Image 1 (cartoon, rainbow over the protein chains, first blue to last red):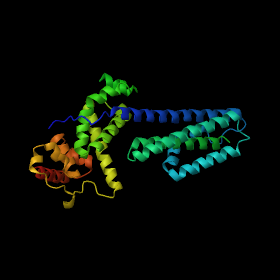
Image 2 (image 1 turned 90 degrees about the vertical axis):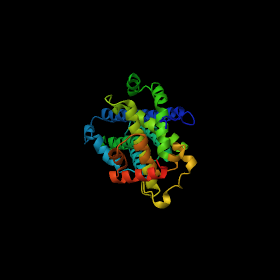
Image 3 (image 1 turned 120 degrees about the vertical axis):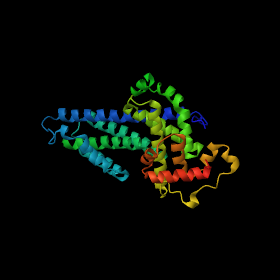
Length: 151
Length: 163
């Protein structure tokens, strides 16, 4: 019995495509993370008299992770709604470029979440997809917390 | 090993020759474990995507082929467990009714075809032990079963194949 058996068709294009999708999502989430950091810089630098009551450095990844771990599909909508409400409430306080950065970050994260969720329907047992989704949620929650703490 | 290092640095083009080199062995393993060509093709894709994501954890003290082989076993078994859990069945619980019909004599000539007709639990154990060379303890570890259960499954598989 020989160990090697050729697959019925070339599987490489599918593998390459899946890897490239994941790279794109990761890049999108990372860019959103950078935009989040830029948002904080705008908020803090732009309004020096209102220093965050909780230093940004205290928002540790593990603290965010606790929130993300408790997040599920229904939570996602709630988190997004809260973030949007926060943006609306602070529309007059935020610089236009800050608001634009927040909205762009949110859009990037949401696009990644939609694509990851679509892929998860096809591959519900893929732990890497779950990890990517958690990262996307983490950035979303991060954004909300940073906005709240910077007020 | 130069290819592996390039892949570890994120070079996707270097991953293709690695895939070409190892796909036959990986597909053979997946086909024998799953017993289904379409499912095996999907698992092979899963294995290589997972390998890409985890290749930074590969240490060069072990051969890449060995590392990939173990990864493939884990991916296939994880998927089987998850699918069965979703279907509210117990992993590797091959009851008497779950056994496939006995293998016909003419099919025994082609051991591969006969192996594919084994019930999932017996097939997995037989493939991992008699074809891939894992020990009872290693298989028990993969499956989360007692070594005695593995031996029993192997005995059943051999009986069915009359090896």
